[in-house]
Image (cartoon, rainbow, N blue to C red; front, side, top):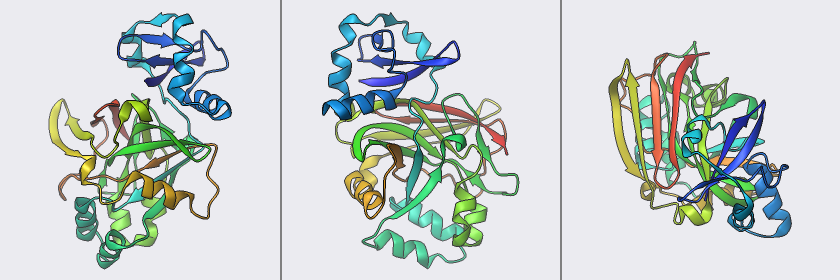
Length: 288
């Protein structure tokens, strides 16, 4: 199933889409307000999230599928982390931008993955909300990525992520990575969380990105998560290693869609990221 969070009178409602209908799970269990609540319940019961939802849908009222257009962040993770240089094209792009390109070659070929802190809840937005580009950067790009959703350290689903980045700041010096990656509105998640059973093999998903400026397409490409040089399991293990994971977290797995060197985001651009089996994450752009 795919799980969405819908606004409702200043609060939110958790709804589940099984492909045939959309069900209001909050109407059956008022304490289930978002996917994190469902994942926590499944963790306690030692069940899959879809098993919990399946026990509720018979009693749940249905929702007009058009309401999903108003969905917010499906999950508000305590922490968002990200993996870097997991696709060959990303490694090549980092080399072109950086004053120290050899560092990225070593990361791509190393046994240790690059894992970095990306965003807090206050720096993360959802579908339909603007993502940010820094006012002190002159080269900014979106990075479409498969997001792994974890509860108590276990993989419970997947979402679409946008790891917005300043390539000019990171390219000036790799030690500026936190400033290039983490700032106001630097990350977007949504439109839903698709359960692990719904997604199936996370390394066989088509992913595309389209950027429109003044209603004109200025970038459009697609790829597959099969191009990842590291597995999702490997990246999760690296994040878990010698660390304490949050109750609910998201790990972004890197990008293989990188606009050409002359491209930079501008305010009011529209970014649409689509991942097979999950959905479309759409955001506009604002300078922060």
